[in-house]
Image (cartoon, rainbow, N blue to C red; front, side, top):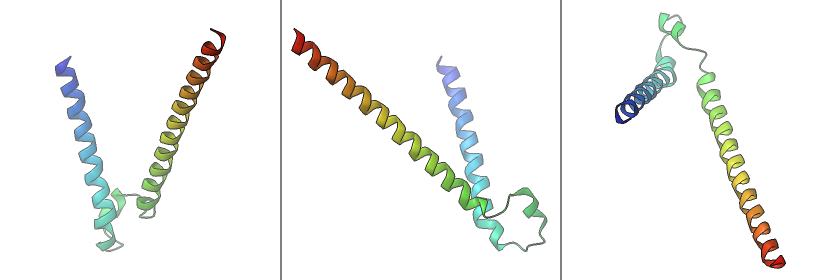
Length: 89
């Protein structure tokens, strides 16, 4: 199991390094290139360099909020059930 965990971790590290490098080049290098440069064909429009992280941030915060809400509701349900058992017994 340790070897498979290391392989998965190494793969995730590689993907993260690639995404970071690609985004850094896209967001910070392309504005300084001439508009007719052939490197622009490797990247989407620069407006997506802002929209994509904003979308990921909103979705991530929404998922965290939903998870916290679900946990809070489950805890409240447990407290109500415990209070009801104490009341009956």
